[in-house]
Amino acid sequence: MLKADDLGGYYRVPSDSRDLNYAQYFEEGDKVLTAETDYTSENTERLDVPMMVDLLM
Image (cartoon, rainbow, N blue to C red):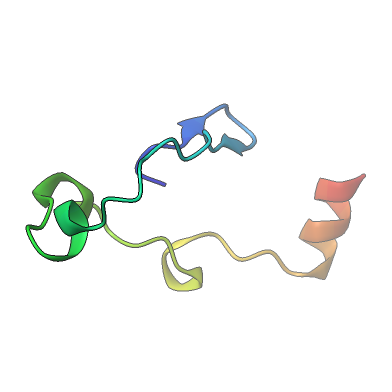
């Protein structure tokens, strides 16, 4: 979600163009990526069945 583009009714997630050097994320750390709140079902809008039907129609 940190790099996703909000296009109104949906998000566009760009492709992952990172190299395989994971040291910068696990050993050295990257403060920018950890600054945002994780995207979970607890912090997003949950749809009930009628809302889902309206969305799909």
